[in-house]
Length: 258
Image 1 (cartoon, helix red, strand yellow):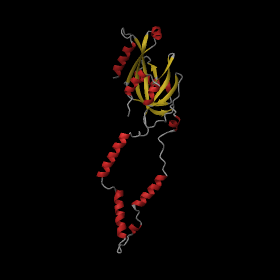
Image 2 (tube, one colour; image 1 turned 60 degrees about the horizontal axis):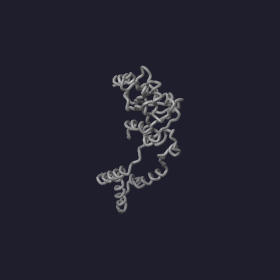
Image 3 (cartoon, helix red, strand yellow; image 1 turned 135 degrees about the horizontal axis):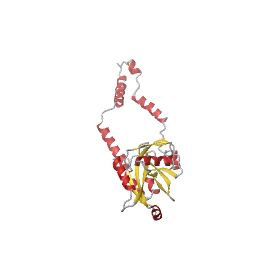
Image 4 (cartoon, helix red, strand yellow; image 1 turned 90 degrees about the vertical axis):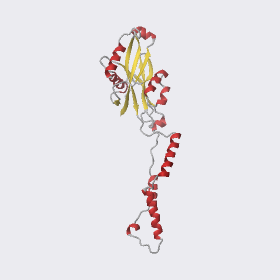
């Protein structure tokens, strides 16, 4: 697989009478995976309730329910005149008493909010937002005399394979203290764009061919580098607000929703 992509890169960088000369870029799609489970949809809630009803109808009595029945039988036996209470029965804790204790303990527990401070402030620079969704790292990067919101990318250097280029793209965007795990040595996506006519005439290069790699963040601090004007951690639904439609269309092909 790597050999095939190496051959493809060589072909892309050589002069072709039909296509001309193209620059090759490596880019990285860094994802922060969901930290908490997603909210159920209305359909999922209805289906969950159906399954619970079926389970309740077909289930056997639990140990706790059997304790309730035993407590009721013991209470009836205590009403009899000939009943002699044992030491075990005298100190017996009933199921209802346990339930009362559990209810008191439950009142002392306050579940954590699904919303973080970053959610409340709508801080899109924070990785601690939208904990039930994937977040994707995008940057406002200088591209010649222009700038655009894209996934971090850099031009491939000589004797560098595509994955090494993508790894360097991440370092050049975030610094050396940001950690991520790359998935495999083969690109997960591809995008091609043409340079402005003036640039094509001056350089003789038609445009850029971008090969995308997937990575998952492992932590660390983003330290914005000089070529990066800004950065955001955004969900897939938020990406069309920043990315150009044609660019997002290609990225959307390898952004999985689970």
